[in-house]
Length: 320
Image (cartoon, rainbow, N blue to C red; front, side):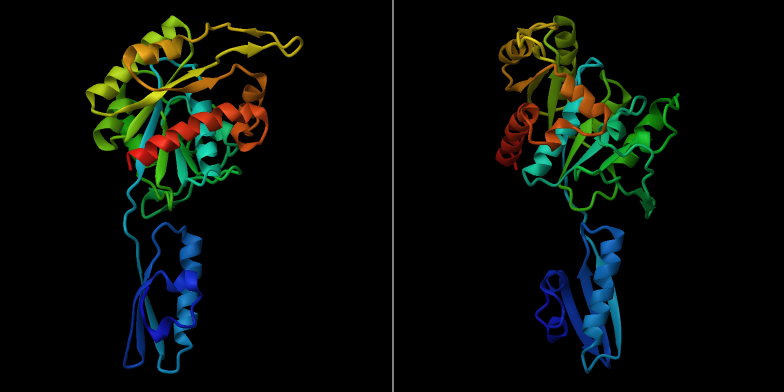
């Protein structure tokens, strides 16, 4: 904050962003830090500075210089070697749970060929705006901004892109105007292909969360994904067992269509943390399809997501 009588008339939140304020021959020059602000907020703040500083008796003209330091963001990849294990649902709900805990988090839907975050986060059909040749993430009703190819192509349109185009698309989604978000959760596509390689080369994550269902086939592919992160020097934060246990809505009996405990056993065998289990529950599927993720509510079905998010938050704090 500039220690200057010129800023005395400004509200504290604005004055705190003034890094320099001088006046010479009736012309005031104010340097204003607008890092992390969206375009509308920048314009509002600039106008407030012009009005406030311009009201000083010795000022005839006001020049406002806007600056913004590039914010360092941590990236956490959410992946698995196999499709259909619930990576996208887990990513969205983890982001919401972290947001409700006070973290400033955004979601990158890196599944270029099969994007699903617009549906889960309830902003299908909304196209992102751009500024300075960079995308501005799409807001969601749950407070988590997101960027996805699902926002950029027509719903249901198939993409037949080769590796370089996929890599460029991922770069545009990650290297965007994320505002004050200091954490990005990247929802990876299945496998260990072009998207994963581009991310590891250009946007190395701070860590990775691996998701799997309990059956052996899914665990084999999850282990392959873990090997890729290990080879790239990206720590695996832990494993999550999804679709773990199904409670009959009529009698309450718990059954295990996909097996039970396989992911926790694998985590122990690989000497990796086990972050928790997410049940196979109709409410999770219905909420995801309706753009109302369970973690946004206070029902018991949100508890497993909050528990995993708390362990992720603890890891982020310990490694900051």
